[in-house]
Image (cartoon, rainbow, N blue to C red; front, side):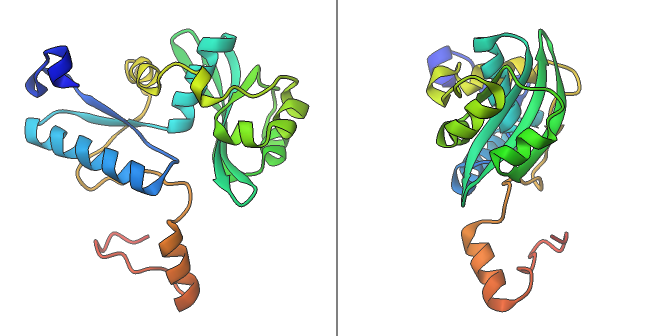
Amino acid sequence: MLQATGVTAAQLAGIAVSDGPGSFTGLRIGWAAAKGLAHEHETALRAVPALLVAAVGGAARVGPGPIGACFDALRGEVFGAIYQVGRGSVETLVAPALLTVPELARRAALRPLGVVGDGAVRYADDVTAWCGTAPLPPERLPLGAESLLELIAQPGVGRAIDATSEPVYGRPAEAQARWEARHGRALPDPTGRGG
């Protein structure tokens, strides 16, 4: 991407990454690349929740207001959140959580103008019953990078990360869950930070 734009890594003011929830492997690879580039060039690195990025993309299609975002978490659940998206502002109405679409609807004080994401598409009947409109699939949204850049420019959005930071996966990796079930205890943390 740098080559295509004619920009050098040293010219970057900062690097932004999606903070999950999302694919364990995809998040780890993306974060590792961003951390390496940021470390090498001593560049600031910030993370923004992926559900917020999707909601901002949804607002670009349906207009400002409450927007739901749901990623398929399998097992009948979604990683879901609701944001009030305005022009140049965002507010979390329902914080990201692992739940069903009806549970997300019960937590919502406002009915969203739209609900975006592959989880919304998978549970389209629940979404349509809740908000009265069909879900917006990911392919109908602007590129996530566009929304991420729009968000990162807003003060107070996202979190600063460093070499020891980890993405928010939303739930343990399947391998970790199986290990913990087999051993009846939490997987030891080799960093000693706990968790």
